[in-house]
Amino acid sequence: MGGSLIMIIIGVVAIAAGFSVGFYYRNVVDKKYKQEKEQDAKNRADQIIKDAQKEAELQKKTKILEAKDEWFKAKSDFEKEAAKTRDGIRSEQQKLKEMDLDLKRREDSISKKEADFTAREGFLNSKEKTVRVKDAELTRLIAQENEKLEKMSHMTQEEAKKMLLENLENQVRYECAQMIKEIRDQAKAEAEKEAKEIIVQSIQRCAADTTVESTVSVVHLPNDEMKGRIIGREGRNIRSFEEATGIDVIVDDTPEAVILSGFDPIRREIARMALEKLITDGRIHPGRIEELIKKSEKELEKKMKEAAEEVIFELDVHALKPKMVEMLGRLKYRTSYGQNVLQHSKEVAIIAGLMASELGLDPKIAIRAGLLHDIGKAIDRETEGTHSELGADMASKNGENEIITNAIAAHHEDVPPISVYPILVQAADTISSTRPGVRRETLTNYINRLTKLEEIADTFRGVSKTFVIQAGREIRCMVEPEEINDAQAEELAGQIAVKIQEEMEYPGQIKVTIIRESRFTNFAK
Image 1 (cartoon, one colour):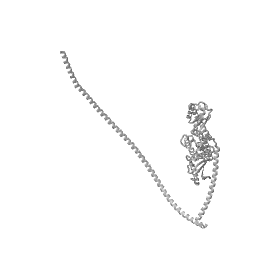
Image 2 (cartoon, helix red, strand yellow):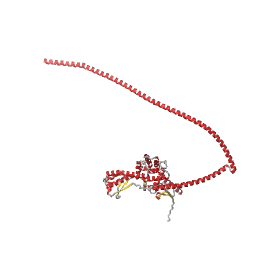
Image 3 (cartoon, rainbow, N blue to C red):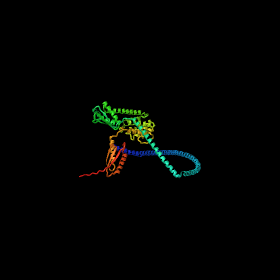
Image 4 (cartoon, rainbow, N blue to C red):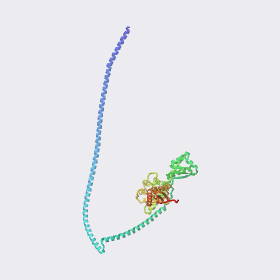
């Protein structure tokens, strides 16, 4: 019992001691910790304030430096601008000084001229007085002579003058008429004779074959079995061929033949050459087709170049650029109204050269201009513009002189000529293209021309029926007699002729005939 009590007392004392120690630690240690924490916070605040002050001071110095830099820069710009302005002012001042000197020189010159003019004016005044005196004396002498003549001839001055003028006028008119007639007859006879000789010589010296204008080429086959090989499995061969050449291959019932159709004659010729090689070789497949087409292209280029060089050699034309030779070769496969353009160019060159020789001009210039006058037709289907404009531009870029380029550009009167050679080329071009048999009119153009003639006539009031006869050389119009009288019929013929001239182009002339008739019918019963 006593031991238990002691243990209890000891426990109570220990608890009291623990409370005392805890209270002391809380009051003393916590207070010290708070003081240290407050001191640390104060120190950090002081440090932040110092750092902020330093940063503010640094920013202040930076702004001051930036402001100084801006000031110096502005000052430098101002000084440069001021210097530039001063230079401008000095330049203007110098100009003003020069202008002032020039004005002074002009003023001195004007003063000298004025003095000279005054002196001359005085001299002329004195001369004028002298002339007036002499004129009065001359008038007096003429009057005296006229009086003497009137007394001798028993005619007044006006009557004598009138008679003399009439006689002179009649004599001069007669002599002038005779002289004009003789000169005109002589010039006409000589001009016609000389022109005929030049044209006849030109045509006799220039005879060339022409090719027929066509858009198809026929390739002959050894047998009809070859058609299947050309078409290939599921048409792959013919498709490859058409895609590579741009030419349509027509395989129809024509025995042992296929047709190549295309607008471009050069492409069509390449296709023909390639297809003939394929038929001879026998190996027809897409790879071989492509290979032989490329080979045919090279062969055709060589053939066109050789054709151009042959013509150039025959005409003795020198120093043509390779590009011009290439374009001339392309004309071998270019036709116009059935006429081969390369052969036509050769004809024009020969004819122009002959006419130039007969007229005492340089035939080499005329031959060169005639050969190149249609060079633009080599590219006119691929490039926008007229063939004369394109040809002149091409010739200029390839070193041809102004006379040649102008002859090319002006041979269809698109631009004014600067020499006589465009006129020679134009005349030679007309002779070559219009000589009998050289060109032909296509059936389509012929039908369109006849249709157009009928349409023009039908637009006029009173025309009931229209007939085009004589292959388009004559048009006959039946008119309603109630609407058109005889006088109006004659006027209508002229109106139709004028409208045809305005709206159509045609060779030769077209005869317009108006038929007006009245019919009266009755029946005997």
